[in-house]
Image 1 (cartoon, rainbow, N blue to C red):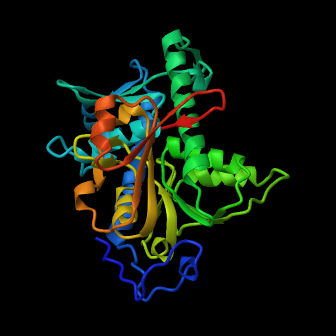
Image 2: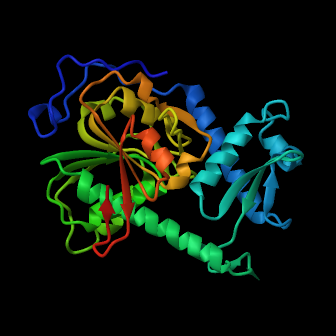
Length: 350
């Protein structure tokens, strides 16, 4: 567990001298050898699971039971047993979140968790050299609405909530966060000073955009020291010292699920980093961009509990689309809820 980070002087607003990174007296936390070993094993295990899922000829479905009876898998990962299959269940959940479009996790009483591959237009209807049935009209429409919702949310966050004269912004993981980053690089905003992210997809977006003639942008992209996880597309920080050097005006944080009754935010991806951002970093404004189904979702680790807030003067915003009234009313106790929709100008929020 990373120790609490102490500072010798109060943190000032973004744009002041204290917003500039300053050296910390805290020692850099070096990852334990066991941590690195566990990370490598987890990476190898998830790679093996995805490879098995894509290679199977049995209706493109994979269960925990089938993995635990596979001789090669058991030989590679002898620590995973039927009595303790929690690592596999977490692997399934995180793989499903990472590949949210084509992969789903279902629970079956007889076979435990089920990882199923759903073919869609992302793969052009072809895989492993054989023809696949095209997506149904309903599936195509659902994909269109999903992409449209993320697009509206991303544009709204950038145009309405990144409004400080000198923005120092943290962008976390997630596909909706990617749309926030895309809206940012496509904008002509001049008030963005620094962007920090642990999302490999966002880094790649910035690198690809840098090839355009109109770049480089007005802001600086701060790279975070850490280990790249190419399965989830994240950077796992070696420590939180670098994150703590900044006074953030805005932190845009993704969520796997939000409990509307108590306001708790859950996440599978980088939960330790997100907890540190919520609890221990200097942030004036938090923005959580989510699709409406996240209010009904389950799973992940608690990364923020509104009942445990200790720092005054912070803003907490949720940006979503078409949120049911009961959820909006419940969440309004803890957050300012922005409902985004499609109008002639492309965005509107309340």
